[in-house]
Image 1 (tube, one colour):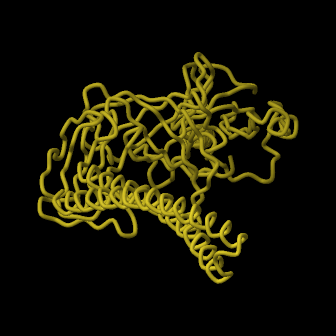
Image 2 (cartoon, rainbow, N blue to C red):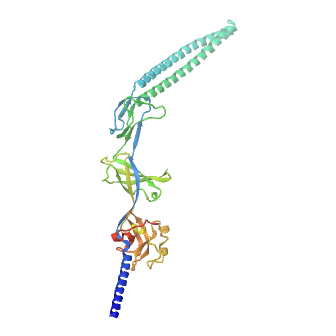
Image 3 (spheres, rainbow, N blue to C red):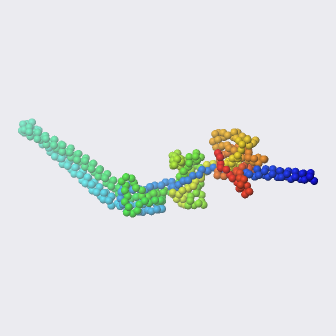
Length: 421
């Protein structure tokens, strides 16, 4: 009996030992969370925010100072090129035009008078010239004195000088006519500027004046209206951070949403990437201009957009879940790296291609331990990263987290933060 009891105890202990080993191995296998390597499409996008605006926006101002007499356009008014959108009180400017016309008439009359004076003095010059000739002949014959001859010469010289003076007055009168004409043109131009004209076809998106308000154009032309030339074609000014600007190119497609239509997505195309940096609170950004169509006029200037610019796209490629790159087990150095390869074998690809980089992911070995697998990776989205090279295939499971001891009973897991990559 004692032997039988001993054998029974030994069997029970062996069974307990086998059970403990089984449970320990099972515990080791279940402490990791895994996910599959899958095939599928992947896209690389750059996200940004931006503001919508019309492609061409014209500020309509006033070149003259005066009070607004009439408004012919308001917010959202459709206007045509050459259409009157406002009228500044023209009466003061009309008075200046009338005054300039009177001045021009007076200047023309002065020209006529000067011309008449020239003709009169030329007749007098001929008379004085004949008198001097006769006096000179009588002086040679000794009939008149030398004084009489000098008086006649002086009269002649005076008549010549008078003709020259009249000619100068005539030239001055002509100049006054030209000045009066210029003053009249200036007054008429100011009068025409009282009619505020739309320079383009478009829609009024801003009106900054009311009837009776005085506008002053002493230093700069005040803005009365802002007219968007064509709201069916709009532009999106996207602010791209410097880390992403190298991936944004002209011709790339962009999608965006606005808060006004949360269920709608709109599309556009990158047409310009500007080189001018914008620095705000030590953050450097660059502007990328995106053109888009707005046929139903749903989008309005000034709306804020959340933008996604498609910078790369690949279909039917191997994809690794992104949490796999954030997992790091607690190992004694790198002795757990198995025959899947070494990390050094895959380093340097970033420098060679500029598009790929190398890192590690971890899988479970047959003994339930984490084993590092070096991989080359390409483009990435929010959920997956492209696998370009590495000893993994579709269906393989990679470790993305670990189940804590406290949470194993509820099968909840802990996914550490991403390190590197």
